[in-house]
Length: 452
Ligand SMILES: Cc1ncc(COP(=O)(O)O)c(C=O)c1O
Image (cartoon, rainbow, N blue to C red; front, side):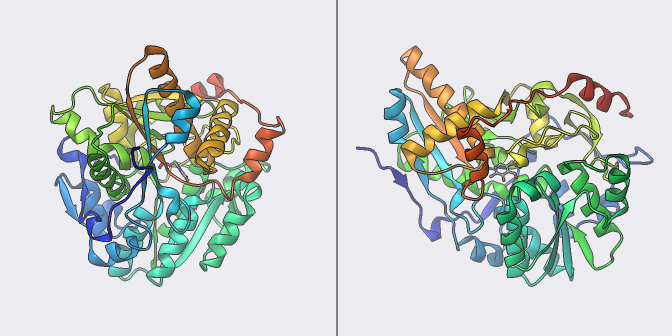
């Protein structure tokens, strides 16, 4: 029998992060100043980020050393296990091998601390006192709240209102680590006030919460901003996941045909897939497939346009070239709060545009149906975001059954859903609505975008 859990020792924890920009088929499009529309330099970002992270953001070095202080915190839960989903395979009667990298074993239950810890460390090194951030479902906020506590920083979190209401336990977790949490849009910032004036009952969105956190950081000298996805340095930090998975699959004597991850901003997918994509880009594994899984209510890659857009709703951030639904688009309040973002990481968008990465979009009900099958076979209740990856993995496994092919499927189980049981309750009681995104709203959100 093959092993169910493939583990690594602490000594096998990666010592470097992998930077895909060194191997990208094209150089990334320049990031532009929101007013002048000219390429920005490191100094333009200095009010928001510490210089070490800005340098990582623009680096094209293939490998970047992980500081010992960061590795020491990683050791609290890393290396994470790689599971062979033998029970799910049997249930699906598939010849496929299904593996999942389980990031839900981190103290806060997701992959997010891989970058939160690194970001808190570099900010502390440069004398920052407080970090401000946004959170969707609360996974990122809890990760940063924990990381800030570990490096003795204060933490303010703007939590998307619909999630703040749906997930009170995530808020309590953040507060347990000592963070201050505001429901966004809030009256704490001018950005929040502006949104509330136009729409008092706004459910909030990641774009709005980012505007609030960016404004907070930009208007306080001792405070910097921290982002949980999308940026190059965030994706970089997440590559510990894929490097470990590669070593684990080598032990199992397998290599994936397809690597799958849910896609909110792109960080868990990139973290798992980029170290494997290095083999595709070098020509060693030309047939490797990578699949981004989106919610049908916010189908950024599958239905968005490849344009310059703001990272936030109000238009405070620099302009980045990405697939976008428009920064003013507010997706329906689906339970996968972490997937309700109008854009995606520029490096991932470039790879998608070059047809190196694929994307699919699913509605909530089939996603939760897959998540329940997974819970009943593998035992783990997945985060609603991660459930999107489960759905795609099951579809790939069923296709392998139809085709009678052995196929190796690897997906990122990016987090557990122990705080998301309300979502499961809604699904089990038939209360989940499969909201389609509105083409008219997207068209309107994209219409006003200025391009260089
Ligand atoms: C568990 C989990 N998975 C996935 C995501 C999506 O984000 P990303 O695409 O950056 O991994 C989130 C975001 O909050 C999350 O909490």
